[in-house]
Length: 373
Image 1: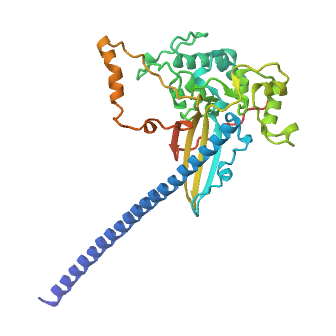
Image 2 (image 1 turned 90 degrees about the vertical axis):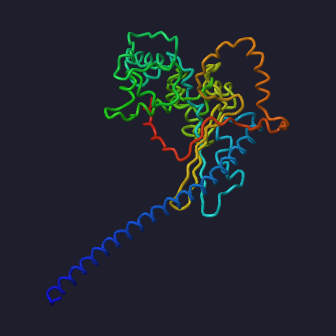
Image 3 (image 1 turned 180 degrees about the horizontal axis):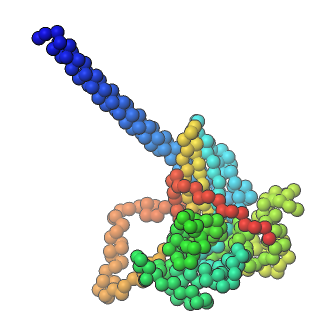
């Protein structure tokens, strides 16, 4: 091999070595990046599990405190009763390095959409500066979607059979506010041109609850709910808000609450209160946030006391059964319980019904404040 051939051979070997080093470096970088991502995911999962345990513990402590107040006061009415900081009341704190925050939203301070009638909806939309005809049209669209035998008061008559992808009205109350996007005319009112919920959507969601209960808690009713129910004039609404929030002429006494509707009637100078109002919480949303450094875990639960709110569930009427089948039904139900099961294991006497629970759900944006009357 002459000198020129040797130089070519050494150059070829050098190129192979350089290419090999490049591939090796690329593989090493890729492995390190993947390992870093895997470690980060595992670290976050471990952190989430740890914070979730703290959040569940905080929820149990909170429910225990709420039950104590409920037993003493004959029900829950408002955080102004003294349970606004349940963890401090119980003397509970999370693990070292963690912080816990609890806040409440009274779902029964809204109007139960399952019991909203045409007059209530129309009154609300008129208070939003809708013309009478538009308010009635929107009301007809909503109630036609939610009620089986509803008779529209306007000429508005949606026909979902002729859309590109035909569908039928469910004929039951909304289970999610996202259903508004499927209701004719309502989608034009509650969504912008890009199909995103607008401020009216947020105000509607802040005024109505998807849970089923009969009375709105006057201690937490927002201005839109008061306007929708049409129970008070502007001066009474302002007086009620000042009393509950401890502002205006009631600033010196702090936030207040009503034990019963008679107390509210006395404050407002009325003889009686509308039957649509009560003063006891029927559904309470508990928001718990646990933080540790830059990590956080959020747990949201909606609870109902005994006799409180329920979920909106559409159940079909059971089909008629032959006599022989019906006769064997009790035996079948009895056999479902394992023999020898202690009576205490058959039912957990929990003080609240859990209507909903969510973990790390996206927090909805706050609605725009309603205009002052």
